[in-house]
Image (tube, rainbow, N blue to C red):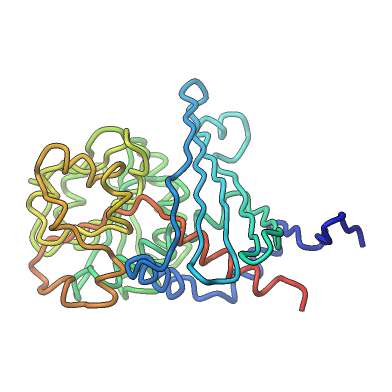
Length: 326
């Protein structure tokens, strides 16, 4: 067994097949929810996000890192999205997670997860939002987007809602049809919808998962009793929802208020003075105190989730615990 001078075992470098096998043993929706609670209780060290944009390559790199206070580990995650890659025969996403000891600073695990853990933890966060904010009676789920995350959202929503009717919208109708077929394979009654307004008017639970830099959903499209989870707006530039939607919403929630001020849907609404910071509630707080969440099936609720380090911390710790040598 190869060991470097610091005693790090190469067997602690884990490739995607082992990681995905371990993931099957993790109740991810539950642990991501626990992570949001820790964040809202100020138990998490979360430095500012590192970010690099490569417009010429239609690519971006996000570096998220942090730790639970007085825990054993800290985690650094790098995730890339290069959206022209499929034209080159390459996957659009990649990345890795590094797990270190809080006590010695020594590296404990390298998770070569190729962006898959990021995809899963992101989708699980959407499921947490739906679990606590979607109306009791959901007759149709609307998915806005046709990429990997759109499919992952559908996969994880199965854990928190009994609804199996999905309508999918995308700018490219053929891609929407392919996404709908994949969701049929998951067990949904899924169809591609060409009219976004019609999708919104007939869905009680809507998830947006696009890299759009201009609003796709407008307030006049949204009926009372709708929950919207906005997943795609994870930079200052991106935007999927009209700020008027947040203005009319009864509840505006997010993973991290501090982060939402500078990126995501909430940042746009704050700058345009459509909402006030004091009216935003963190998802972790809603889990702790459900009275701060949805109060009736007639309310409009919005969750703006740009992704926070605690999600990476929780999933990396769970996977490492399963895989590390006993």
